[in-house]
Image (cartoon, rainbow, N blue to C red; front, top):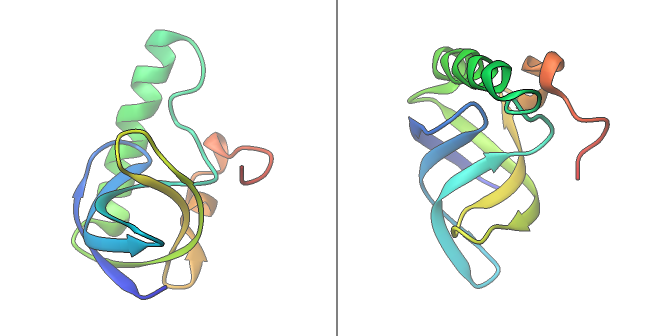
Length: 103
């Protein structure tokens, strides 16, 4: 897919882009596949989410990312997909939250 500018970081693994088209769907929100900062106990998950969001802001806010393979069209209208920054899978920047493999 083409490059998309990140307009806003919504959570530790969800961003808002200028807009995407996939199959017959369009939208702005993307869940980055490959890691989940909200796993664990409630308090720990909240801390992880905040840390991951801050790291994601410093990494890609207002920068361009490339969207790869779409994993899922979510109920809220967002897509879950593999995303790359400077050719590197963004989930690689979050090894402590990485799932065993992409869904």
